[in-house]
Amino acid sequence: MGTTYSVKIANPPANVAAAQLQATIDAVLARIDREMSGYRPDSELSRFNASTSTDWFEVSADVIAVVDEALAVAAVTDGALDITVAPLVDLWGFGPSGEPAELPADELVERTRTRTGYRKIATRKQPAALRKEIPDLTLDLNAVAPGFASDLLFEQLVALGVNDLMVDIGGEIRARGRNARGEAWRIAVERPVDAEPEPFAIVQLDNMAVTTSGEYRHYYVRNGQRYSHTIDPRTGRPVRHVLASVVVVSTTALRADAWTTALNVLGEDAGYELAVQRNIPALFILPDGDKWRSRMTPAFQTYLAVAPQPD
Image (cartoon, rainbow, N blue to C red; front, side, top):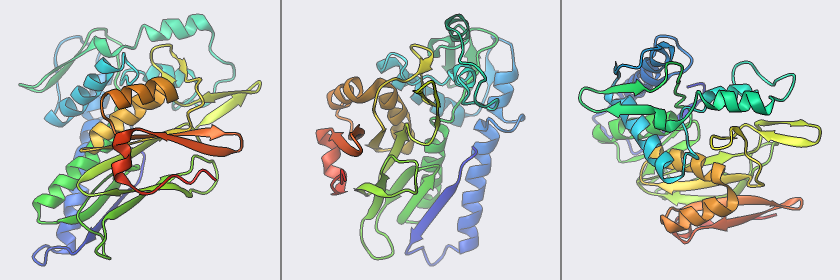
């Protein structure tokens, strides 16, 4: 998935060796890599993307679970989360080809949009399969696969009898029980700056997940205009709002992962209103001159261990 992982376990079961824990971690990550990697041509996802058939294409149940969750969030956000958006990401210079020599013309943006659209993908559970409506439709699961991987690894370790753990895959974190000091797991929310990470707030988790989606670090500037790596699938262009980052707490890392992306695209106003309406624990961080301010939903306050520090 092109990212890193960290697993912390406190009070491991006496009957489970460290080697068994590592083998479980390796097996889960290898499984997700075989299924959803966009980096290896033999993964299920890459083979589906390479296919031009509009017939059913058999995949694993894992892939269907991830795609179904993404489609559910897409449906209630009018496509703010869209796992078919990769051609637009590439067009704006945030894919493998890198920053473009020239910004894409409106006509090219609109033509590229015809190759995207979450409504153009269908799923089937039995037997598990995907079907694309147009031959050149592709899926990019980078916005949701790390969250699913974190959940799966978490569940596999709990099945071994591990009760106190924190799993972090690419910043998609799920935690349960207590840390080595016997305290609830505390997770720092980063201040949205390009420099070395420093805490803006701290959340406390027990059998919950937290993820962050941000506009810092991944962008470029042309003619004084900042172009974010986050593409709004509804316009085909980088988001134009001032929201710096959004943090979501949920019961699963997959769901938190999906919602952080969607709320980030929606922005500080529409995103906040939808989060409140759906009782989603969410924290929005915005610039305030050379400082930062925050806006959180009522549901988020439950998980705060250290309140946001604007300065």
